[in-house]
Amino acid sequence: MRGNLVPPAATLCAAALTLSFLAAPVPASATPSVAIPPHPALPRAAAPPRVPGATHSVRLVPLGPRHRAAAGHGRVRGPQGLPAREVQPFSLVGIVWDDATTELRGRAQVRTRPLGTQRWSEWQDVQTHDDDRPDLDSPESRAGTLRGSTAPLWVGASDAVQVRVNPESAAGGRIAEGTALPSGMRVELVDPGHDPGSARPRGGRGRSAPPPAPGPSDEEAASSAANFPLAPLGATEIPAVGRPESAKDIEATHVDGTNVAEGHPISDGHGAADPEAEPTDRPQQGAPDSGADNGDGEGSADVTDPEADPDIDVGRYVGPRPRIVTRAGWGADESIREKGFVYNKTVRAAFVHHTASGNGYGCGQSPSVIRGIYRYHVVSSGWRDIGYNFLVDKCGTVYEGRGGGVAKPVRGAHTLGFNTNSMGIAVLGTFGRSDPSSAALTAVATLTAWKLGLYGVNPAGTATLVSGGGNLFKKGSSVRLRAISGHRDGYATECPGDQLYNRLGTARSTASHLQGR
Image (tube, rainbow, N blue to C red; front, side):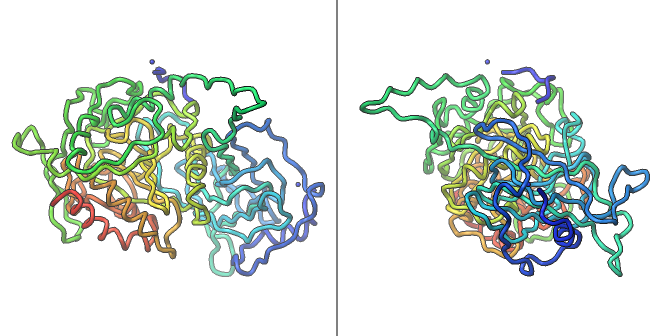
């Protein structure tokens, strides 16, 4: 990771067959499961020794005669992909490219071979637009490490992969102007590693006792300490508490400057850093709404400034705290993220996302899925940490995301243009056509009732945020949004999928009720 931050205390299948498969996309349903030759017939890519958690990156190659460089852009015209190849085991896949500001306009598909089998899966689409990311003018972006990336796709334990990426086509099947594929495209194959403790030997009669576990690293200690006093150091979860005990969690919102990443002052809420900002002993609320209403027809949020209205009781409407699995609980490798944490001044709104990683996971696999997304965001995409502040699985379990403290106003990388003074909640799965579970929706409502309540925000209301720039709102514009918004409310995207987005109204009303309003 960057060093300017101060640390804290497969032979190919027959060529003609391969190219005919890869040169033009076809619907997944038209591509049956196909047996592939035994392992020796596929070349094995060189890879580093197996370690718990790893990322294997393979550059895509031109496919077919239509390939040529796009003059002046360093981009490639024509399809790219990866012929069938054996690789080190992986469970999550995505595609990245050199320039984070370049859009991938085309269709990306992968098929994989489940570990221990000899048959391929169907072709699966990878969502090419990944707008859950850092703001392009933020310190996280200006550091120069960001790469363009698709959304990650969870495929389960696999040991072979095939990829095809086709540019958008104009009428007649020609490649449309301006749709050359980005340069430097690579497929990222992520092994999320073992669940915490699963690979540890057990003592017992006739066996030597396992060696004592080493003490936590500085990064592990800092990540865990950021959740004090909600849980002790090293805790794998933060327990649920009801009202009114949850109101005491306001104490944990305090940011005292300890472990704040160098070069990342607390944001002033206007898309920039405020060098004069001083942390306070209570959450600082946003200014009254001043942007244009987005037509939601709902009431204004309780988003006022305690300094202007000393009678406001910021602890009055704090919802019950849900059980939250910590980073230690899902097995975050704290050594791969950047040191320190980045904070906003407050939390005015919550953006709900889906991870677009597919729905083929079991709840027992959720920690692995999250570790895969984490590695993809940091190692493959060049972010400082996982982008979301929280993640929720289909069984309704809430997981801590970006480090810095679940109660604190941690700045995430989830909604391009609106990462300042907001939080991002990602529901694990893809919900364009599939319905989210009732357990996941209840978890979203409970989490927002608690976290927004710590900052005096009514989940059924609205709040004003200042745009950092995007494809819906120009930079610097004040925008009134629902206090619980879908990603598409702040950026033109399909996220969080129609089926999840259409249920956010229920989440808002439930969260407000849980706050006692």
